Every structure is written in C-alpha cells, then in structure tokens.
Amino acid sequence: MRVGPIELSSPVLLAPMAAVTNLPFRTICERFGVGLTITEFLSADALSAGDPKAAAKLTASLGGAPFGVQIYGREDEPMQRAARMAVRIGAALVDINMGCPKKRVVAGVCGSALMQWPAMAQRLVRAVIEAVPAHVPVTVKHRAGWDERHRNAPEFACAMVEAGATMITVHGRTRTQGFSGSADLDIIRRVRAAVPGNVPVVGNGDVVDVDGYRRMRAHTGCDAVMIGRGALGNPWLFRRIREVEQGRPDPGPPSVAERREVFWRHVGLIEACEPLRGRIHELRKAGVWYTKGLRGVDRLRRRMWQIHEPAALIEAVEGFFADRLGSAPATGVSAAGT
Ligand SMILES: Cc1cc2nc3c(=O)[nH]c(=O)nc-3n(C[C@H](O)[C@H](O)[C@H](O)COP(=O)(O)O)c2cc1C
Image (cartoon, rainbow, N blue to C red; front, side, top):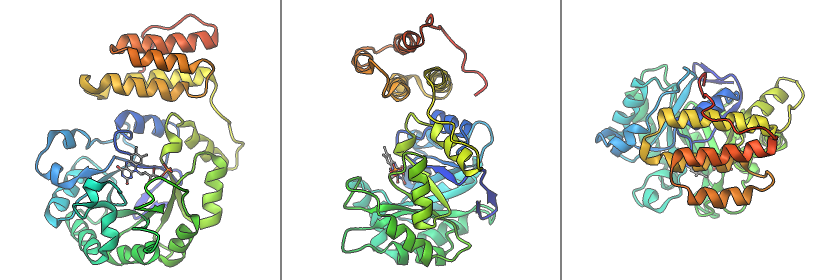
C-alpha cells in the first residue's frame, strides 16, 4: 500500500501509543515486519518550546525503516514548527492526532475535540502541509465521532482529505466511549466509502489476531489495519499477518524460546535507548509482556514488583524462561544485531 510517495512493505501499522511506542518497541515491531510505526502523540506546543521530555520522544527508526511522527495541538505555528522538527529527523509522514480522548487534551480543543470543529481541523491540516516538503504526507487519525449523537467520521474524514490529508486512520469508537464497548466496523466502512479511492483509509480498533485483521479488511474494505493493544508483547502478530497476506501459512504463536530471545533483544534496546531513570519500568513491562500466559507467571509478576534493580529484574525473568525451557539461565545474552 502507498501513502503518497511512501510504499509500505505491509498493510499493517503499529498504532501510536503514549508510553508504549518508544524506540525499543518500534524497533522490535519493525523486525517482525510491521509496515509503519508512528511515535506516540507529541505536544506541538512542548516540542516547539524546546521541552526536553517531548524532544526525547522524537526519535527516528534505528534501521532506516519508514516511520511517522504524530503531533497534536490547536495553533498553526507550533504545529508547523513541530512538523518541521519531525521532518528534520527523517519522518516519512506527519500524523495529526484528532482522536485523543484525554480530558486535558480535549480541554485545550486538541485531539478528539477537533472532530467538533472541522473547519479548525482543516486549517491545522493546511498549516502543517504548508510547513513540510511536498514529499512528506500529512495524515490524520481520528475516532468515529465525539459521542453517540455525533458520529461524523465519514464527513470529517472527507473534510480532512479536502484540506490535503493523504491518509485517514479511523478508530471505530467515539470520544465518550473511550476504550469501552467495541470498535464499530460499520463506521470505518462508511469512511472508506466516502473518502476518494486514492486516499488510503486505515481501520483501527480491537484487532488482536489474524482473524481480527481479516475481519477488519473484509468488513470495512479498508486499505490497511492499525494495531495497538494487540501488539503489546506480541510483535509476532505482524509477521503472522504478513505471511498470511503473502499467501503463506500462518506461522502461529511464538515458542517459549522465541519469547526469550525477543525479551533479550528488547532488553538490549531498552539499555541502549532509554534513560536510566525510566529503565526499571520499561524492563518490568517487557518482562510482563513476553511471559504473558505462561505457566507460573503470576508468581514471577509478584516478584518483579518487588525488584527495583535492572540486573536483578532481568535475572528473574531469565530464570523463569530457563525453568520453562529446562536450560541453565543465560547471563548477559547479547542483544546486538537489533
Ligand atoms: C496506552 C495507549 C496509549 C495511546 N496513545 C495514543 C497516542 O499517543 N496517539 C493516538 O493517536 N492514539 C493513542 N492510543 C489509541 C491507539 O492508537 C488506538 O487507536 C486504540 O488503542 C485502538 O486500537 P487497538 O484496539 O488496536 O488498541 C493509545 C492507546 C493506548 C492503549
């Protein structure tokens, strides 16, 4: 599938997720064949004011794979400055967040609040397009609508395309739904039908397996699928979908040995990319992710919460894997080659 001049290797995108889609996780997903990763949403105001926390999250892919940067805001100039910063680090596209339901975001008329103000949203799209070179697509991610009475995704998507958006991603829930209920595939189908055929529409919401991917494509006619929560600790999903898409058999879920290998790879990336301060949290998250569903994991989890030192935490997870595999625990397995 194409987004403007960018050819994606697979019609599956990793959803932007705050505090999740950092560089280590994006890199892992790239290894498993995701078509595109996108940074978590970054405040245009914070970026353009030089906030170091926001700047630290503006990261280019390690291996040169295409990546998008997602920004949010409501004023043209900070959005333009943030978009130029994204382009400077090599972003293949700039995505504008018009779906975030958080109170502090919508209170500032950003994120999903923009779905109530299509003219303002159009102005932002035009401003960002003006700020970036012509070869960098500007895309929009939004929801089904603001609430049950205002499910305006089809009209809203068309307005964004009219303003120049090159790709539309729709999460099939309203803002007031947050993450409750289930994603409405019908509204994604209506967006696909409404938007001109040369603009890709990406369906998003509740896809956690190959069947869910197939269902999303078949029911909505969308050009690609974006996966968020279903990819947490499960980057194999991208490989499974890619194989099936290319007419090969589904390789199935990972073995314990594969989980262990990816855990170590993730650890190496965390050590290379994440500041010392947040490292224990990231390691714990990786430990939880890659051991999910395995026998005896509850005990490991309880232990992990009591450990506050990175090396000890890695050792506990490795010991758990070694037990399951009947092998001696490895120490300092290299994560090189990521
Ligand atoms: C922890 C978390 C953080 C999220 N952060 C963002 C974000 O920064 N930008 C965004 O557009 N959506 C964000 N989302 C929404 C996801 O991108 C996606 O639209 C939503 O989770 C539905 O897809 P899923 O069912 O595949 O998870 C976030 C979701 C989660 C669970």
